[in-house]
Amino acid sequence: MSTYKNRPKDNYLQEASLEDLYILTESWINDFELYVSEISFLELLINTYFIKLLIYENVEEINELQLDSKKLKKRGVELLENLQFHLSSITEIIEESYYEKNGTLRGQQEFFEDEISYYVESLKIIRYTVYSKIKAIIEEQKSKLLWKYN
Image 1 (cartoon, rainbow, N blue to C red):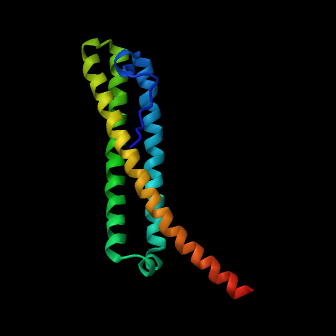
Image 2: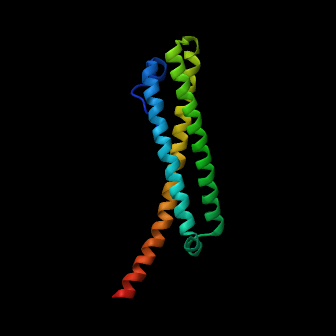
Image 3: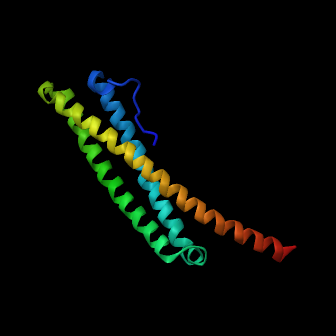
């Protein structure tokens, strides 16, 4: 499984300046806003093609896919909120010079990096599953339309 680790070197989180960690965390927040939006789109695709998916797929598989996407979306929203709180903690440390909290902050940064890596892999799996199932339906509809109008 590949990782999402978005840093230049192995010990980066322990050696980076607080400003660099701020920028990294801001980048994660931007990514998660997109991820949550993407999950909403995937859910819309599932709901739009639900009846047709039932023709090609098992009901339990579709329900499981819906459940997995809802769980992933909820986890994405939670991570986004936690990242925003973490960003405010970084800001507080920078502005108030609370360097005694610096070690805790760097540990949290590593935790978020691991969580993000796992989340991105889960998103890739759901994305692939939804797109492949919908693609089959769209191709089937396309071939029917070609026969109908030729």
